[in-house]
Image 1: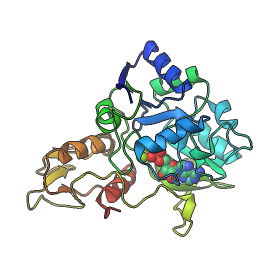
Image 2: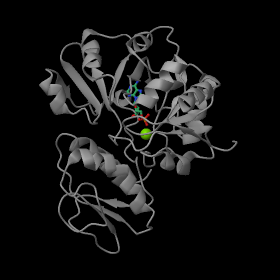
Image 3: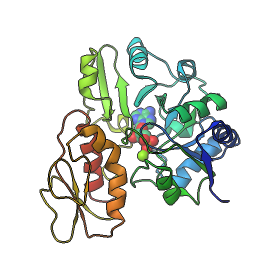
Image 4: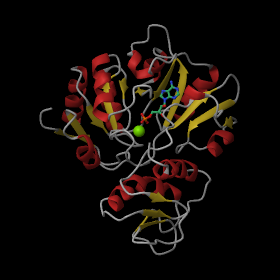
Amino acid sequence: MSQLRLLNDDATGHAAAARLLAQGALVAIPTETVYGLAADAANGEAVAAIYAAKGRPSFNPLIAHVADLPMAEALANFTPAARRLAHLWWPGPMTLVLPRRDGAAVSSLVTAGLDTLALRMPAHPAARAILQRLGRAVAAPSANRSGRISPTRASHVAGDLGDRIAAVLDGGTCGIGVESTILAPGDGADVTILRPGSLTAEMLRAAGFIPQLPDPSGGITAPGMLASHYAPDAPVRLNARSARGGEVMLGFGAGVADLNLSPDGRLEEAAANLFDMLRRLDARGAPGIAVAPIPDHGLGVAINDRLRRAAAPRG
Ligand code: AMP
Ligand code: MG
């Protein structure tokens, strides 16, 4: 792979990113959740290159990112409930798993052979500008090596994948910091939360939906929910009151810590800091990372989901 191109978050950068994507290249782009590793979703070879660059198992399907609703509806079948969710939360950090349309212009590698397709309309202005210029969907998983910590800055991407991709567009720090909420809408008001994110169960309930947890025996309806994920090199210990045995401490709220997700105990701030602080603590080379307890409501559910995977036994 030739040298990594660094693109600016301006019209020239957006045009260059869209041109590279149209040529089948891999380009990391900022979104409001984390940086995505984008490829033209209709180009099978380009999508295959995503799996290769990440070292991602090919049974783990990708999310297709779209510029607007017509682009989404050309790829998947929307029920009234899905349409209502889209009107409420798109563009934004919500992914909908919907029946894939016959003849949809998406490589079967994107869906890993499933008859459903995961769709998202990102809100980040750079992602939107690139998608509008390209005029078709991109497949874009998080721009990190498979199983590792997701990137929330262009420098994270460059460090992880710099020798494997064509370009990264530097849009600064991602505002939300955890991946999108993945929803499988049901027939009525029921909606299954396949992955928690910043669109919370509380927010769904307030809009009249009935959030459900995935059926644990459901297998492929929640793929990619691999137990070990987001893993630093150092082992992670959760619900820690203090560091022990040379560990570094990731705090939340009051208390002694090497880095603190949010000294005031704000969950939005903690989510935005989570992956960057895990990377920075990991780089210190300590024998372990101890993490303070995080309240398990609202956005805390998504933070705890990522932390449990970071702490899970490695496969
Ligand atoms: P990432 O791209 O790394 O954020 O991961 C994408 C997530 O979307 C993975 O957890 C996938 O399992 C999930 N996903 C993608 N497509 C589908 C689908 N058709 N059904 C259920 N989950 C999906
Ligand atoms: Mg990921």
